[in-house]
Image 1 (tube, each protein chain N blue to C red):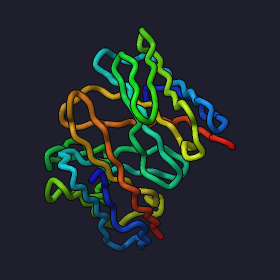
Image 2 (tube, each protein chain N blue to C red):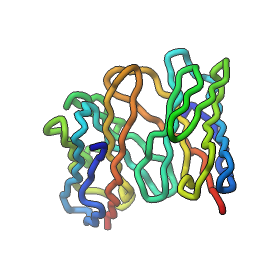
Image 3 (cartoon, each protein chain N blue to C red):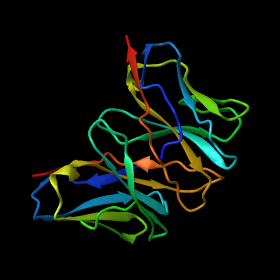
Image 4 (cartoon, chains in turn green, brown):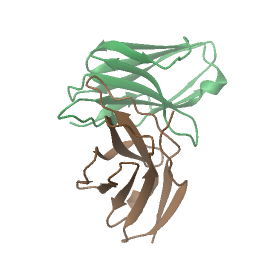
Length: 114
Length: 112
């Protein structure tokens, strides 16, 4: 199983809502990532978890709150978002073997903030 | 900050080889060259990576110049399904995780 799943596929939320994005992998990968991708732009790294510990926060606003409850699951909690936060949110996972990585990406959650 | 330069777009005829160049003149000795692609409305997909030797897998070949300042991704027989944005990314060696900094990539259009 080389799949990263993300739910939901689409999400529309108001600026006062609280919602969560979910990401799951069963490949035994110990690093998991959140990226944000605006339309016609490349993905931008937001957070990296390594062995369930937050290793990188790329100065992401606190209205985005990541959580890694276990090695297979990664959540992104959303609160008080702005319309400019509308984007495709991608999750990925990776494992270090033999001096190299290969990140596996999910299909993304397309978020619209109204 | 992206450390690579790629042409914004390229065209290729179906069945022909697609050669996608990438400049990474500031690459350091412990950095790898990785290639990912993103087909429209999908998450990025790993293609291949290398340190200094040429590499080949079932998807593509990667040719790295001897001075490591540039590389070329080769899709030997491009198909319509290879239409995508191709990203060349320089990544430092790290045993815990991999920090990918995507540049603007090359939009490859494969036509019949």
